[in-house]
Amino acid sequence: MDGNYKFPQIAVKDIASKAVEFLADQSWTGVEGFAVHGPEELTYHEIASQLSELTGKTIRFQQVSGEDYIKTLLEKHHTSEAFANALTDMLTAIGNGLHDTELKTETSLKPTTIKEWMNENLVPELK
Image 1 (spheres, rainbow, N blue to C red):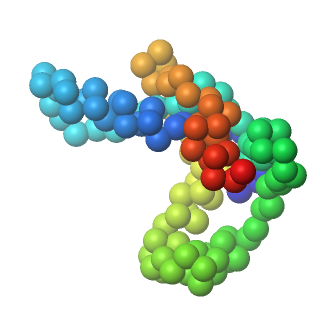
Image 2 (image 1 turned 90 degrees about the vertical axis):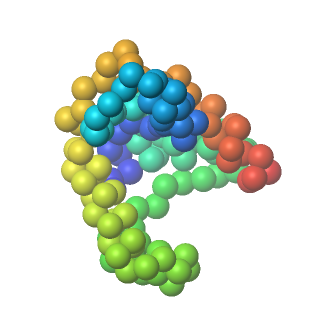
């Protein structure tokens, strides 16, 4: 994915919060997807910059080819070939504007910024 492409960032806890709403709502029925969006759209370069600021370390985004990404997933992370291909296809679709078609609404927007998420989850592991 192009490091300059802006797309919505969403924290796992915000996705989980939406799931809990549906699980707790006994009146809800059906099968459908629901959009959830973080409060901001960022590029991978902007995320790397924020992480650099939070950790005091130089962190940069490095774009790799789809083939190299699949190779890394297979060899270093021991994923299945099907998973590696599916994840690569998903990231390609996102980079091609998949999320650009989703309408952001009051109910789809969630509060956690990427910086808050990094402070809570990632920064403690990197220091």
